[in-house]
Image 1 (cartoon, rainbow, N blue to C red):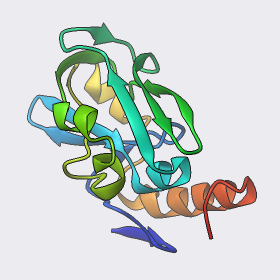
Image 2: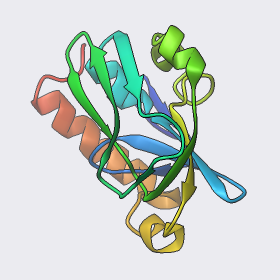
Image 3: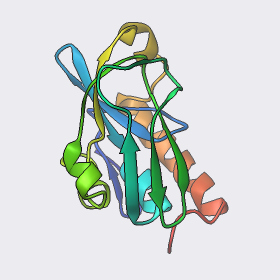
Amino acid sequence: MAQIANFHIPDDLYYHAVDLLWLRLEGNEVRVGLNQMSQASAGQIKHVRLMPPGRARRQGQNFGTMEAGKYVGPLRMPVSGKVVEINEAVLQDPGLINRDPYGEGWLVLVEPSDLAAELAGLVHGEAIQPWLEETYQQYQAKGLLAE
């Protein structure tokens, strides 16, 4: 597990380097959520809106929106594919994202359409620790992390 300060980032997941979303491979599908640093920098998650299942989206397109203490904006697809399930529990209790970002706080389950090609552009394995350190420094410099 990669770690810096009080952030713990599981190294068995894939990460979108810019949007700080994680992906967990689950057979032919991927589960998507916000990583710990992303949700911590955003603050307490107050509202989440997710597009209904069945919609295909390209990598980078919005699949929902999130409102938090320090952030209001889109949630973007880390991989192309069709959303097959949304986490209804997060819609009812958005704080799940803050309390359990890698478990009950997941956002959507996606049936990817070009996974092999798109996984190559995500951060995984031994590359996570250096990416985490660099991202942490950038967030610190911008004042996005509470001390």
